[in-house]
Image (cartoon, rainbow, N blue to C red):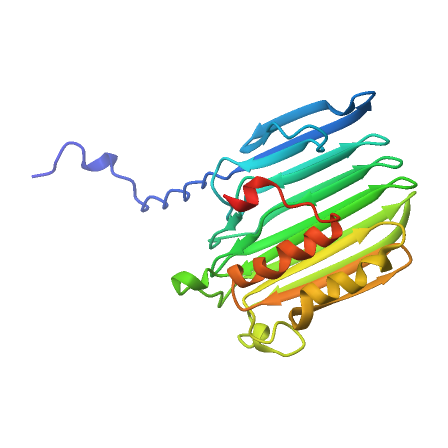
Length: 285
């Protein structure tokens, strides 16, 4: 017996449905400060998507702080975050983060972080985000561009932890690129590119790379007469890295076996460059 609906069956097998598009996290934040008679004040605040900005109360006489928050809890392949901070002339402000940024294993593509800093004449910006933690299989492309006016000062740090060693984690695969471009009066004065590609399993063990260390930080201080900080900074860093100063630039590299050990050197090093001032309270929570 022939079923009445048999003739309606397709002669060719149905094609597999397209794979579902994975949800991605995106965020953008923009903050600007201006100087008034009473000091540095907020001029503009914009936040979109997963990027949030909070302005905690600070003690009288201290510069304002902007705290960046990624409400998605971390980034993975295809996620995008961007931040822009602008300081008008004579301003002094600090930008930090609520917590460490986590970069998780990527199933496809890379996470992207873009930062743009604009520091006006005789202004000072302390860019002090907490560490970025890379998980095994993470892929991150990060770029930072800064524009400095005459007399502007920029203290910049980026610290990276390659796996949470306290939990037995390590990075065995993935990709991390970090690109910095600093300009003063539209002239390129500092450029730095880092690339870690774990297709080479011996990468971080190489003496010229990390020599087996699992955490690192780069500090850049664009300031007049940077050499005056060298003796104190070299004493703090010791054998955990190196520091050089020339032509209005100071750069320090720090390595450590763990993230906790990195902080033991990084926090006092930043305090030296902040004339003894401590770091924002979020670093201590």
